[in-house]
Image 1: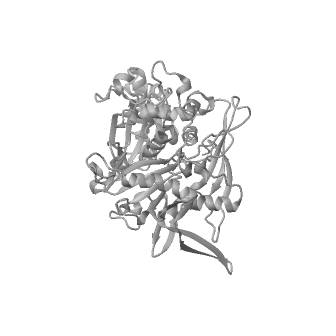
Image 2: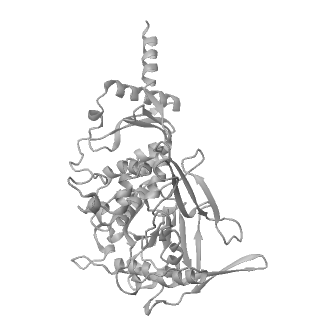
Image 3: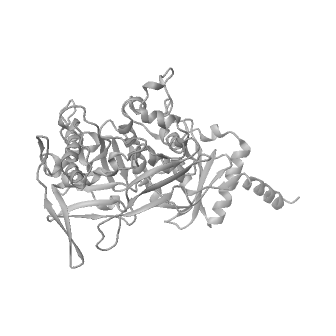
Amino acid sequence: MGEAKRRAIQREKRHALSRAMKRERFDLYALGTRRALTRLMGVELQHWSDIGERVIGSVVLDVTDLDFGWVLLARDKIGRFRCVDLETSLTSEQVAVDKLRDRIGRAVEEGDFLALGDQGDETNYPTDVLALPTGTDPDKLHAFFRLLLDTPGRHPARSVFKEIGPWLAPTDPHFVREFQFTQFDQRLWEMYLWAAFRELGFDVTQPEAPDFLCEAPGIAFTAEATTVSPSTKGVLAEHPDPKTPDEMKSFLAEYMPMKFGSSLTSKLAKKDKDGRNYWERGDASDKPFLLAIADFHIPGGADEIGSMTYTHSALWPYLYGHRVEWEMIEGQLVVRAVKTPNHSYKGKIIETGFFDLAGAENISAIIFSNAGTIAKFDRMGIVAGFIPEGFKYMRAGFRFNPALNAVHPTPFMEEVGSPDYVEHWSDELQIFHNPNAKRPLDEKIFEGITQHFFRDGQQYSLTPDGVVLASQTIILGPKTGGKQAAPDGK
C-alpha cells in the first residue's frame, strides 16, 4: 500500500469519529471561552465535535489575512471547554475542516481527554450551582431551586447551569448557597446577566463590587445587579390586586415606581466601609457605571404569569420623570412626553425622575430585562439541543410591532426548538440611558438591543423588529399532567 493511500484511509477513519455541530450548541459550550479580541479577529464558519462531545472545534476565517484556521477545545479539570490546539494560515475552508476533523479523530484515538484538557491553572473549587451540600434537607431548599433540580421538564435549564457554573467566579463565598436556599431570584438574575454580557462579546470578570467588569477593545464599563423583591412591611406590603384597566393604570403609575425606586435608590445611596459609592470603587472609578434591575416582587405561580411580564412599563416613566401619551390625528400617531407627578400610594410619596436625583448623574444607564428566569435558561438549553424525550416547549406572548402608527404589540406562539426558532440571551435586554450622566454610555456598545433615551424633552427608543415584550413558556410532557406554565412566567 502506498503512503498516499495509507494516509487517505487513516484520514477517512478519523473523519468517521467526528460530526458537525449546531452553532447554538457550540455557543453554549463556549459561552465562557471566547475572548473579546478574538471575536474581532475571526469569523467562525463551521463547528465540529467527536461523537461523545468530549472535544469540540471551530473553523475560522481570519478577517485580517483572509486565510483560514481551526481551533480545538477540550474540557479542563473543572469542566470548562478551553483551547488545547489550533492551526492558522490555511489556504481554504475545506482544508481547515479536514485538518480539524483529523485532529478530533486523533484526540479520540489517543483517548486521554483529561490530559488533553489540562491547563494547569484550574481552581480547586469550581462553582457548581446544582451540587447540594452533604446532608442537605430538601425541605429547606428554595421552592424554585427545588423545582429546577427535581422537575424532569427542567432538564434543559440544568444542562445550561452545568456549562455556566464552572465559568463563574463570584467573590461572594455564599453565592451558591444563596441561590439554592434564600436568594434564588437574585442569583439567577446575576447568572443571566453574565450570560448576556458574554454573548454580547465582553470579557467579564466579577470583582467584589460592583458585580461585573465588562471589557472589549475600546470598551469598559461596570454593572451592579439588583432586584425588586416582595415588601414585608410598610404600606408597600399591602400589594394591590388590579382587576380593571383603571386599576392597572394606577398600579403601574403609583405602586410599581415605588418598588423600582426602592431598589434603585438603595443602590444609589449605598456606601462601603470607606464611604465610597459603587462608582467610586476599584475598576468602576473611571468607567461608565450601570445598574441592572429585574422585577421579582411577585414570583408567578404554576398557573399565573409572574409580575415581571407586565411591570416594565412602569420603569421608564419613573426613570425619566415623564410618561408618554399618544393619540391618532388624521390617521397619524402623535406621541408626546408629559411630566409625571410624584408617585403616591396610601400616603407614601416618592419623587419621580430617578435620573434627576442627586448622585444619579454617576449612573450611566439602567439595564432591565424581564427574561432573567428559569424559563429563559430552559429555552436556551433547548436551542442548544438539550430536549428531554417526550417534552415539548411552547412560547406565547407579544412582540414589538414595527408597523407605522402601531400602538399594540403583535401576539405570537412558537414551538421552542423548532427548525426556524431563534433566541439569544440578550434578546430581551433594555438599556435606559441617563441624559444627565457624567460618563455617558456609548449607544454603539449595545447596538441591536432595545435602547431608550430622553433628549430635548422627548423620549424615544431604538427597538429591533420582532423583540419579545412579554411571554410565557408552556411545558408539555408526560410528567406535567398535560401542560404546565413556566412558574416564573417568562
